[in-house]
Image 1 (cartoon, rainbow, N blue to C red):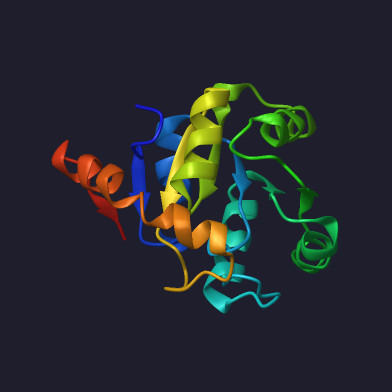
Image 2: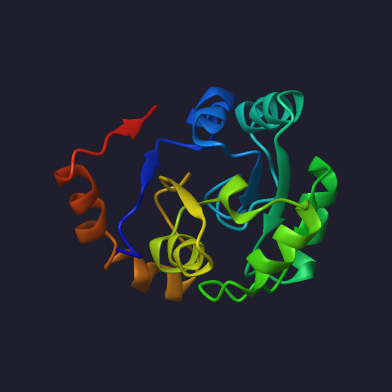
Length: 169
């Protein structure tokens, strides 16, 4: 199903180069808010910074795809040295199409990393790529729209575990 996660990780730091190699993934499309940093934050935790360095050292291509505006995404992306696509229109796969062309990879070589089922997971499913779903970094969301959508996510997360899925930590 398009909404049930394929994999659930405690956070981005739990995604390893070994896991990606096993799945044939060489490029990651990254969400920002509650994936790489807290909702609305411009700060990057040391663990995420080290994870980005590990991914780069392993040869994993990285880019940001966000529904936020350039005003929000640009300073963050430039600070951490990543290319970025703003106003991605997720769950529509438009931003993922742009990212794939920029990354120069086939769909089966890339995955979306994000914390929302109704944007990140759905966009990945519609585009035909894997989604590495991460638990939100913070327990609160600033956007009323995100707060509303979060209420409908638990059944899909339960279904993942009922099918034998595990939390990668």
